[in-house]
Length: 372
Image 1 (cartoon, rainbow, N blue to C red):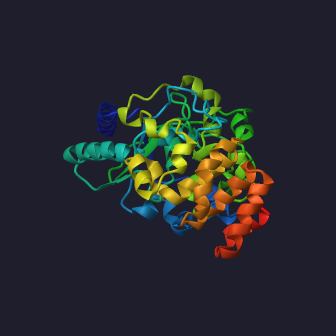
Image 2 (tube, rainbow, N blue to C red; image 1 turned 90 degrees about the horizontal axis):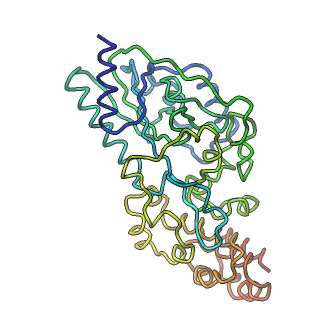
């Protein structure tokens, strides 16, 4: 009977638009728990305090929900139609990660998960819980245990059928079902993902120091980005796909069939000059329904100004100068940095003389002092 239940759930999941389905026991092996403990102990999580705050629940599905016996792990393919790295180095445009170019995947995946959950509840009544990224769930180890793929040397999931491009979601069941076979590691001697990282965020294979990761820096990190890392970010203004995109297993990837993941004009190859002029209302309107909206206008403009500073395009100073007086210290500091990178020394010195004495924020003052 259990096999029939699994088959019915799998068929319905595929009908709803999921591309990969697997079943895992509601427990994690010691290796996953040890990796998480090491990650936190070494401070690799940076200021993502929420990872440490609920680490016990994260490392044990039954610690999050004691009734859990099985986990249905679902994947939705978001494979891009074009090379996701094609826009890197464009002087006048910003690079946004593939996952954020369409609708917010949390909304798309969670809607389908809820539909699947209703299907399960109607046929096999019992408690269940639905998760998409926001709960303390170790999605990638669970996905590997359920046979959807394996965690590559870049710590992300790699699928033999979809390469690097799977969004994940889970349904925890109080129903005990036989697990699928776990996927094995197929990375071999390859280290393309490690070598591709612009900021050397991998201290070793299968280990990530998020504090150096461009995705972390441009999305999760709330403060000023370390000056030594800014030039390495290039024109990436939201996330980074380098380690994902270079994986050889992407030769088996396919373009997403989900309309919600299709890139929108606002987030495909946006002009830096347009982005730099966004106030809060315009930012929210432009990125409505996009995951980009979650970081807010000030952090986003921080990223845009770093890209402008890396552009080598002095004509973009027209967009930088008004932001030297922006209400946000985060924006002002990066406007100073971009000015120093693009303007002639005389202009930078003149701007410094006009503003340094009246600047109260220590970080902005530090940037102005470097501009003298």
